[in-house]
Image (tube, rainbow over the protein chains, first blue to last red):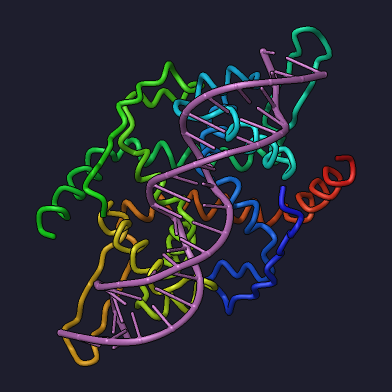
Length: 131
Length: 131
DNA sequence: CAGTATCCTGGGGGATACTG
DNA sequence: CAGTATCCCCCAGGATACTG
């Protein structure tokens, strides 16, 4: 995808208790929290899906972006990809154990946000009014 | 920030069990999972911080991006902002209850990724080798 | 069906300078 | 200290077309 890797030996002082000394997880986090990565992970919690099923399930995603998002997540080991040789071809994507552990808190966070949508709206309007 | 709002009345069929019918949380999710939003939320779990403390705590962030990230998260109600009138000025940011509930799973996910960093690296190299 | 290939644009985001 | 203002670049990502 890039080849430049860029592990970013960032060694932060501490980052408030989290203490993530060396951080190769950073790039992965970027993939996970990428525009479409979030939705792919959440969507696949319901079970493995095929390419076009995912596309149809995730509103607004283009095939190009879905494709590259999937590739990145497979590379990170969060997703598996299975090709069934046939015509027409049949390709299935699903969460690996690593992906399950990642998707779970993500889904939890999304649910939290969704459940508090009304509060959020209110706060936003307040903020905009009182600019 | 934009004024265009764009609530995206997306009404997806289901998105695998999550069933997030209407989704104003989407924009918020974008803010949360934005390049720097993640790190701000995680950093503030350790307690409230001042602007420059945050800047120093989050490697690579520019003041411009930190500023706009903070503004967005305050607007969403995930952060509070307190100004202590003085010279020099003193401004503090912290997690609201809403922010705590958001940052918790986020932090959990990050920890999971960090704990599995070695597996991830291995999978990536495997992937790259086997093109 | 499951993708690539190609072209193109908007705005995310860095660098720098300035202000209350 | 805590930001804004300005300039500008780059690439994430959309549209469209094509292939095994």
